[in-house]
Amino acid sequence: MASKKLNITPLHDRVIVKAAAAEEKTAGGIIIPDTAKEKPQRGVVVAAGSGKKDEPMTVKVGDTVLYGKYAGTEIAVEGQDLLIMRESDILAIV
Image (cartoon, rainbow, N blue to C red; front, side, top):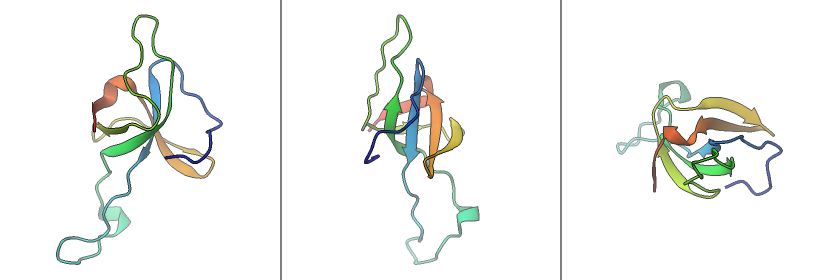
């Protein structure tokens, strides 16, 4: 989770997610280079919008979520690599 408040606020039904770190070794001890790793599909919500007029937000800051493999847009904020996506791109709260 972010230790301080971000200087970016998502609008409406958007959320900002910090992707969970991927495992670097296989069960057999083989180290996988960054270029061969799959994108993580789990992360922590670090900021959330206020929701749409008739649809309040379901997720909140601090929730661990699962999202689609190609969901969101990668952004860099304050030196952190984050994803911004619609709440509808989130599949589940873990």
